[in-house]
Length: 278
Image (cartoon, rainbow, N blue to C red):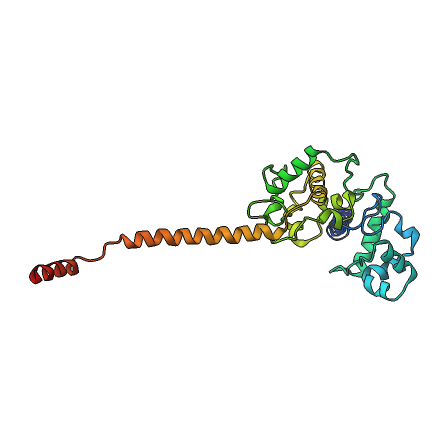
């Protein structure tokens, strides 16, 4: 009997650990790009001690249907929307009441810590240097490999003035990403825990290091302070070079084709006819 109870207790403990890890992963993948717990405001408010600011019933309703709460004219929801500069919190897939309760438990637990695991990456607030920008550029284009072997940014993204054929088009143009995220803090936290499905699948096991994030943020700030060429220039260069290459290949084929082996019998017949006429 004692052995059975011990096994039951171990099973319950293992299940609790698994559920806690699942909740932490869900928060990291869906919440951390807009919120910190003790790291300050980002797009959304800092969630440290949020259960002391509003009761669980209100928080549960908001987390289940943020747009509905904002559209209802709820004063606190309207305040959140105003402080977020009109950026509405999206409805998250898989958000059930049980998950809401688990997330609130996680936030309460993390709020009690001196430093939460979800405070976000803390970058130095020193001014960026030319060296930071150079390193960030090299990371972006793949000239410098990421320490955890993640892919280079240019595989999926571009910025104005990148040169050559430009960057990838799978992801958005990042020329103004520093401005969109309103500075280094929010952008650095987003890079530490990307929220998009594609980025999550790539960087979950190969996260960016803090020094790599700092250099990339410096580079993205730099793209706003210079006078870059329009992104369409790289696309036009690609098209023009492609057309030129096609014409060159066709020209080579034409030369080769004109020197091809044509016939044997016909030239001999024509030659005999000329001799006969003579």
